[in-house]
Length: 114
Image (cartoon, rainbow, N blue to C red; front, top):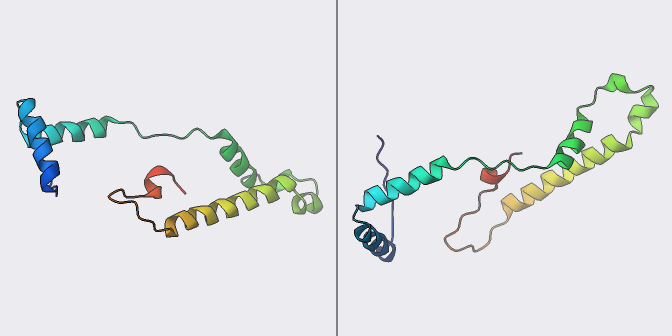
């Protein structure tokens, strides 16, 4: 087993100790159970078929077009390229934004994949 060190302020530790005493267990056991509960959570998969449909247009092979003109003026492909560029700029903006969130930490990479 791996040991983990957790830094808590005195008030939080006092509340956790109080809860552990009420449940007749140790603080370590209480935290271990909570960590196991977190580990059992399945990763959240976001169901977004329209996003996947837009991106599938970009994977279309160029030999499916009848002529070079059709490939050049493909509106669906142009929309998909703009969508990807705008999404990338929005995610970059989110990553660069720094705000006062108190003790909360924002980590977009944990929520979404690029």
